[in-house]
Image 1 (cartoon, helix red, strand yellow):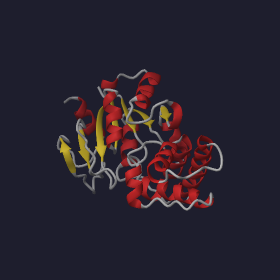
Image 2 (cartoon, one colour):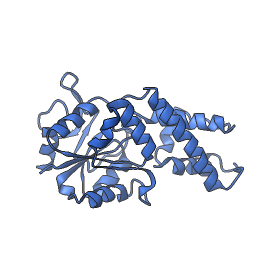
Image 3 (cartoon, helix red, strand yellow):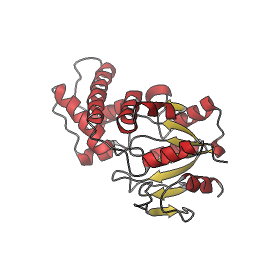
Image 4 (tube, helix red, strand yellow):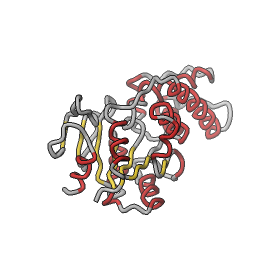
Length: 251
């Protein structure tokens, strides 16, 4: 029996990467007088690394190995990432990053059906909080039994740690839950936690490998804007609903 939906954030709830996180990183670089600029294409490559601080370190290792930080590298990256988070929250507060099609409807429908809601993400808690508050209202934070974010676990996706944390903290069995993701790393993380997983692709993830996903869609869809099923059985649905989610646990 379906009891809970566990949502990823970046790319799943909203298309935050290209016009949100990437822009905020570049703003932080500029403010720190760094001549770095992450293009749309480069950022797509960097997304293979989960976690903002980890992404900066990977960029330095692979694309800018001669860079010498003004202070301790770990501290430098932490401060740079903190500045990026501030810029990102400003973008969200300005309403420049809306929720993806069908997200708000699905959340409301799940609440009305008595399902539990959770978030499992590698992004920081402030990023999640500001996104929810400026798209769904401040009370939306209370819709979720748990918001597991950022460095709350030692290993980020594709490790299963964040999903295992949610399941263990809430006392939920994986067979009673459904994960909703957008990327290969997210899928691997959820599947390793024994969760059936629905994928909604985006421009950055459409070419990822999604072997093991229960259902792959272009978006959650709306009654007047049907989704496109890319793989799997949507049980005749034209948009992703609680009934669609329940049908997946029966297969």
